[in-house]
Image 1 (cartoon, rainbow, N blue to C red):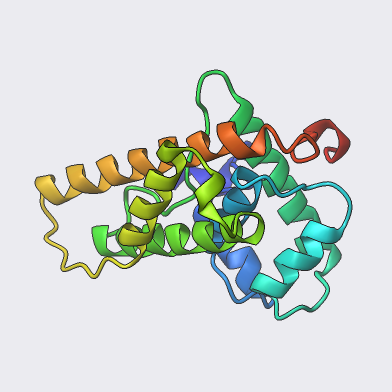
Image 2: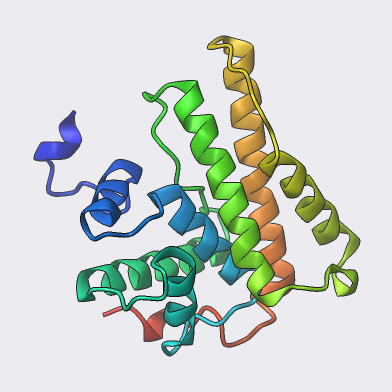
Length: 195
């Protein structure tokens, strides 16, 4: 893999982040952490100050303080999610295993991402009745996707279905952010977090 020798390797790649979290005693993999953060941000939670970090540690680290390296990495992830959610070219993407991994592995991670998104989203949005019909519909769809029990056929049709669901989730997360995350005001002032 060229990624290993490259100094330009993305520090937020799925494998490297999952390994990083494992090495630092975090119970969640990269898809789960990314899903929770995306759900929090899309649901209007603020990522300023330390409150969101305390909440995140409750969700993924049994309430223990993050080591400085982990703290820095999740702040970086939150800033990246904020920036990509605001990207006029719709640059936001789910953090999932690469296409080289088995479809089973990618589907498992996608379902973990959705379940985690719903947890993060639910932190701020406990009552869905005040949300637009579109947002309520995508959250309902996500709840159904999160419950999926799948038998995987490693064929072209299954691959296509996987990519369609991932794309739907990507657009759905941005829809939630546009309705709730943007309006929260305090949420995504990325210039204050970046070093």
